[in-house]
Length: 99
Image (tube, rainbow, N blue to C red; front, side):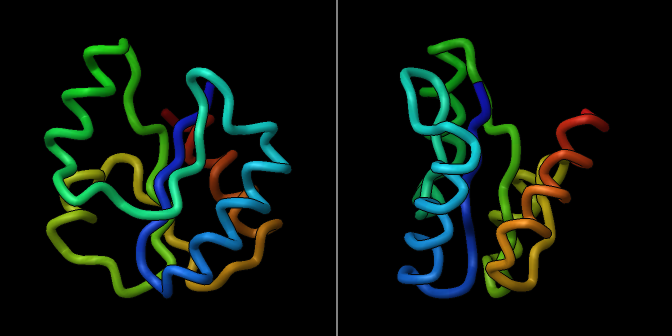
């Protein structure tokens, strides 16, 4: 399953985008999700996911996320300076295929 965290922009924009991406990707389910808010403590979040045998597949950066959060998920950051679902899906595909 795919695990995607959204960061940056506004809470409203992230919530809307999470809903749209979730619908398009067929998430959430038991193991897959689109999380509209970045974890307050990404290390603790990663630890909990690792306990379940999972990890974040991508962090979609909509602009304005903290440098610390972006550095933490550096390998998985997908730059998307807008809420264009088609562009984000294209960039997610590129990132996930390259992983």
